[in-house]
Length: 254
Ligand SMILES: NC(=O)c1ccc[n+]([C@@H]2O[C@H](COP(=O)([O-])OP(=O)(O)OC[C@H]3O[C@@H](n4cnc5c(N)ncnc54)[C@H](OP(=O)(O)O)[C@@H]3O)[C@@H](O)[C@H]2O)c1
Image 1 (cartoon, rainbow, N blue to C red):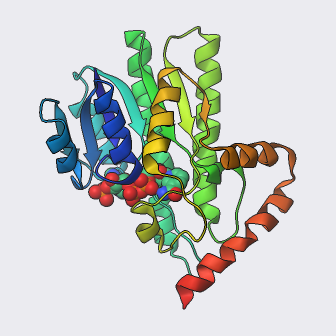
Image 2: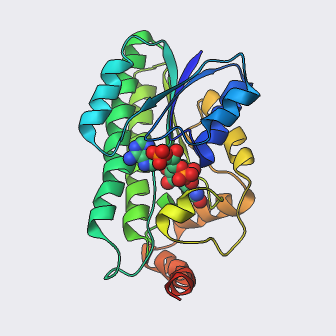
């Protein structure tokens, strides 16, 4: 069993790769740098852990990755690589946000859809997409990031219904975690001020849900409640709740 995991060199991707290795999968890790993959090689000396370097924010590189993996017996794809940014509308970089959409959305769509087509031909396979609790509602100070994750969520819902209608054995899942410590904070230029969840727990529940073919995986009671409220409350009210993000922005400005 071979799983391709994007962004497996750190944070949640590393924890997901660890969880998959534990469950008997070999790993093909894809990101720009190997990151901490050596820790997994030490922990699982008998497992196959390969690495391919690609900058997935460039669509040509996504297509090259598809070419290079065409004959590999991959049965599970985890579209995990992604990043965010925080700050005032007039101080954040438009170029950084374009790169964010290219990675979080365009690369996710190219890889996700292409592997789904491959899996549909094979008659089996699973794709786990990294969405976020950020997909539940729009937000001030992180507008592009929240929108980029809402895109992923809508994509997965649409694919899921089509696969169900076609009675396909192929499954798609979206993981919607709340905050956890990882390289995300450095890339986004922030520090989470409130409670975070251990990344190992998120990875465990993510893979368990994905292997059951669960559509949406939300980890922890607090995030489950947030998911529920997001369905019933108007978006204007939700953005008002998320106004407290301003605290993080103000702290980083100092
Ligand atoms: N941390 C949170 O609180 C949180 C909450 C909800 C959802 N998420 C989502 O979880 C996913 C994983 O993020 P994380 O928190 O684990 O952050 P992370 O530690 O920064 O990991 C991001 C991974 O993506 C890779 N990556 C970044 N840019 C890339 C590019 N252009 N091409 C290929 N790979 C690239 C990075 O490797 P290289 O830099 O070597 O390329 C790294 O391995 C993201 O989709 C994020 O949006 C995070």
